[in-house]
Image (cartoon, rainbow, N blue to C red):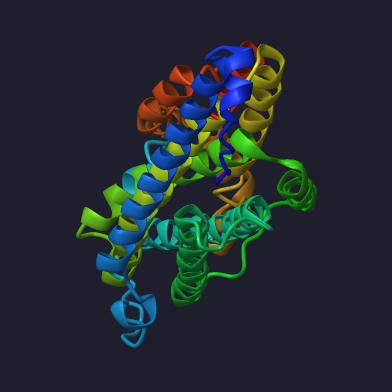
Length: 322
């Protein structure tokens, strides 16, 4: 993130030409630009931030006449099984799926926090970028608690990714660095952002869930801005080999994040035939189309950053993101 700029001595500039000076001026410009972005994000957080403990209505009992998410985002919407389900079953399934998405969000936000902390370790605490990173972590902590309370209020268990995915996540948060860390953060947050923008405007969705989604969308817009900026900045001087490796790492991480959003246990907990539901969900072209259309802007960004390599595309296609 932040870096110091050491100006060359006048004599060394005379011996080496202007190239060293140009390089230092470029680094100084980049450093100042990074600070400017961080300062704007800090100002935004100071003006527009929420405390979920007081903003969300936690006390009113769950009204089961509401969905937990927009029905069109349900993994079974558009299938034969969906047509056979009662309205009560549909609403229960959307509540379980919303809780599953929230649980996946908690899992990845814990990974995010560790990667950001590792990135700023031993850096200048007076630096605006350092302070923004801590602000982002503080917001993510509040989001995780908010998602946990929201999932509990929806009457759902603690959904977790499969054990092997948890262990892959453990490895990823330990070794991922630079653009791989920030691009993976961006993918996870962009996918959540698009669906939650629909949910927060949908009057069929439980009011407290809409509030949760609104808080997350507003505050995550800052995190996505920072992730895009950091991804571009860190890739600016990346060579072909590094770009190829990082593109692959980001795509693999994205695949496991997206495919973990709807836990297969949601169908059983909604009172459905889990084997049939899982089979129809996997073949559901409507849901795949929703995912692809929601990620068009994200894929444009990854393409502009030259992170849509052939190996990476294979994983994005498998996750129905492109």
